[in-house]
Image (cartoon, rainbow, N blue to C red; front, side):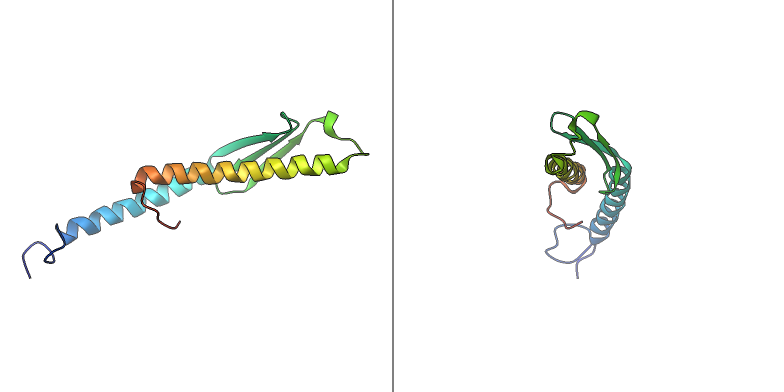
Length: 110
């Protein structure tokens, strides 16, 4: 075997391992940072607002009093579902965007 790595590997194996280890550390750091980040999403023109952590844990739900209509509970339920789903999508998008910065766009499962 040639000195400095495996033949045909195109570089020093030790350097590749060090880069992979650094990438793993960066991924863990970003997962923690984004996981603790608060994201806000609203539905119905601000009638229902959801604050979610990047780890997809709901922090709060705020409902404007004017959308609470006892005769139309279904609309309120729909607004809550829309706000929660939007907040989850925002958390996913934020995590994917931050991970792409570290992984160089490689599609790694997180």
